[in-house]
Amino acid sequence: MGALIGQPDFPIDFLRPTRISFDTVGNEVDGGVNGVGESTSIETSGGGMWTAMIEGMVLEGPDERYEVISWLGARLNGGFRNIVVPLVNDKVGAFPIINGAVRPIVKGIPHSDGSLFSDGAGYSQATVYGEVVAMENSGILRVRVYGGARKVFRWSDFFSIYHPTKGWRLYRSWELLDQTVEANPVSRIAIQPPLREPVSVGDRIELARPRCVMKQARGQTIPWGYEGWYSSRPSVSLSEAF
Image (cartoon, rainbow, N blue to C red; front, top):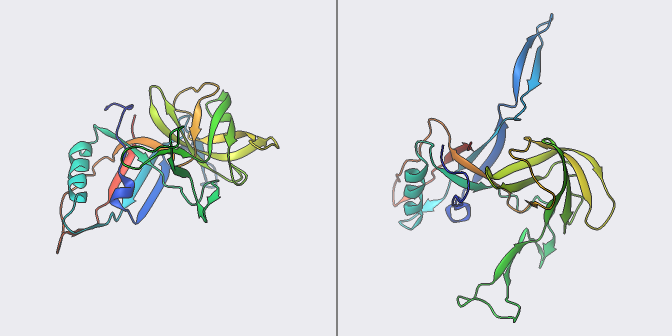
């Protein structure tokens, strides 16, 4: 098992995938069948584990992206080292419209004296975030969300929590049990999968590009190759790291 904290981020923007999918597998066990042949499913206490497919990454021409693909293969092949994978939800989360576009993250924030860094860049921060108000059990949380541009958790929203032992973990709501009526509401939500590690009051939750520490899926590799004039569309298959 590789380290779960302090892991690098998957360079998802740089590699320009054309398709991304996240899912949970192993959510239930078969409890047998009844007299008419219908099976009864029993939910597992762990709630399954996350898988991710990052497909059709656009490599066109001999540039630095081929070095990155080689690095990913060297790091992840074998499934014993980990990487933090973001779920790109930029246009579907509860984010505000700023300057005509949905903005999960704002950039270019200056120092308190109005200056920027020497390269002209500034700070960045999420426009919408939250904090834990209470943990009722591993599957039900009370959280307060700040800055939401619509009703949060109205159907299901993704979020992540950085745990001190398990690192970044991805969650989503499957039922909104209760929600206060105020500018920054407190939501009581049922989550899937259950918490990977207990949380404390005040722990931050991230709704902008939530992330999960993952490893190469079993039996998969990241080969290095191309066709024509350095044209390639590699894909990566990952699963949640434990």
